[in-house]
Amino acid sequence: MRKILVFFVIFVVLSGCISQKEETKKKDLDLKIGEEHTYEFYSDGNYIGYNRYRVTGKEGENYLIESEVNLEKLGLKMNAKYTITKECMPVYYEFVAYVNNEKQTVSCEFKKGSVHEVATKGEQRFEKDIKLEEGTYLIDNNMIGQMALMLRTMELKIGDSYVIPMFAAQPMKALKIEMKVEGIEKVDGYECYKLDFPELRYYIYVSDGKLIKMETKDKTLVIILKEEEKHEK
Image (cartoon, rainbow, N blue to C red):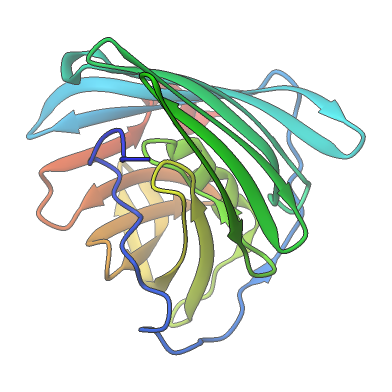
């Protein structure tokens, strides 16, 4: 299935071109039912839309998440649901999207070592089984909340470098992304870890486990946590 939009481009094929680095220390998610977070997109300084996610419930120890992307100025609207474990491992993912008024859908069922995906684009149907390595996160295009949830499980340390296995549903790809913890930088008054994703040409800034800001290295695209939410615990 072709990618919906090119803004949050994570599906560069990197497997095999990065040597394995150390594993990051992890902690379990501790989400509250009803919590909600919104990330705003700015292109060349102009507001173009948002991604919002909310925790809607629990199924055993798994969290149920609903998310929406509204980049209407660019012809994209998405509504998604996904289920993740307390370790932020995916169990189920689905979305319905409209791209320039054309309907697209995805549904993914995850099991140990693989994911079964069914996707539609207009009248076309795609189905595929994709192998996944242990510890693969779900990080799909424009779903900034999925990246934010992943980062909440990580104990960051300056100077560390990691290779993170990810699955992107829209291009139906499993891949590996390198992440380097460069140092501490102030962002909007917050002391943040500055994370470098070299192949993606992104920086991400994280304070106390919370994704505060994400930007391309040329700063043409900036994604920020909605201002009033930065102060929420």
